[in-house]
Image (tube, rainbow over all chains, first blue to last red; front, side, top):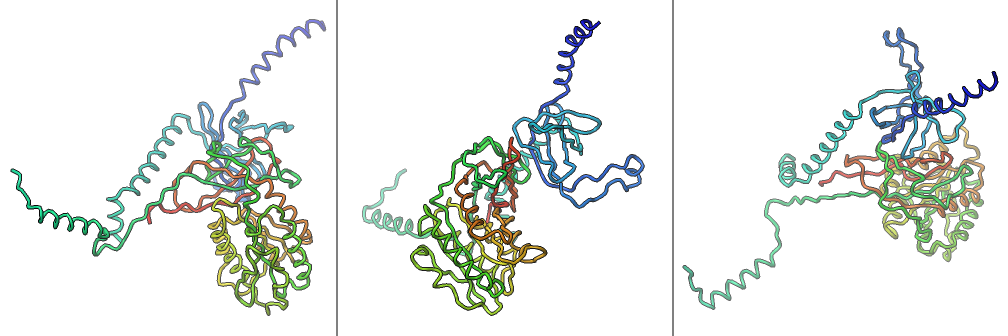
Length: 153
Length: 307
């Protein structure tokens, strides 16, 4: 009986390990800002009645995490929930939260997901923003525009 | 068909052309000139400290990232250790009555600092104070030999404390002085109480940020609890990337810590991530070791490109 159990465990262990590895995703944090902390969640009724969001007055870090297929906007729950800004961040999803293990910490840090965008859509928006910024700079340096601005003064 | 021009007329035409070429290209009725500025690179000086507030001398460019107006920058154009001998140090000594009990003690600490700044050339050291309602430069470039303590006002300022004006004055002095890429630090010995300045606290911070001057503030209050002066000093230090030393830290200890921090300071440059005009806030954060702390100015002004 013991031998059978050991054999089963030996067979199952690599499968469990693979499953765990697959549940983790990789991404890069590209933006960070300090914003109001997300208030405690009070469920569906409180959200619908407009009393769900409680302003605690604290400031928390908010990150934009770019994954392979999805881009997440996540927020820490406390002001000191800072992430190391390494090139690669490993994370996993659990119950509408994003879990990140910070180096050798005993347990993973939980982050509130504020928004999710599909990667192609986000890439397209970024390209549009970049094009707009470039156009703005070119317009500013364009002699005709400068002359018009001076005449308008 | 070509028209032959007599040689005499040819010389006259040549002279006229030369005269015209020497004239300034001014256009009557259009006195406005357009200056175009284009900045593509941000240069930032900062110091790195470990969890015990000791300087980190072995920092690598992969150990930190810069958050510039929300955008995370990891690719740097240059990363070098700052040259300690180029550090520009100014000391501001508050000589108002409110700090009189600790005045002599503070003076001796300042002198001790001056003797400790080995490696920093004489011309990079200056001392400021105030007399009446005006800021005063006590000595510059010859502070070690000038016996600065003897020049300090022996009497109080009769209740007048132009602290913010003196901070702005000293920041402007440092900004115009020395190497353009040098790190500049103003060490403020004060209780943080201002009574007569024309400048506001915001003006003083603005002058320090524009001049890229870091303010290290040593609190001379008896206690920092609930003191408005302590809040002012803390704010000055935080906004400019400096350090605040609460009482009774001991001025010499605080100065040692400050100078040690500058011995482990770095300079980094990177491509401007956003051309939005206005104030760009900056934070430097670790990429791996969350025990690392970084001190730098809180941001910079990116001007409108056309003035």
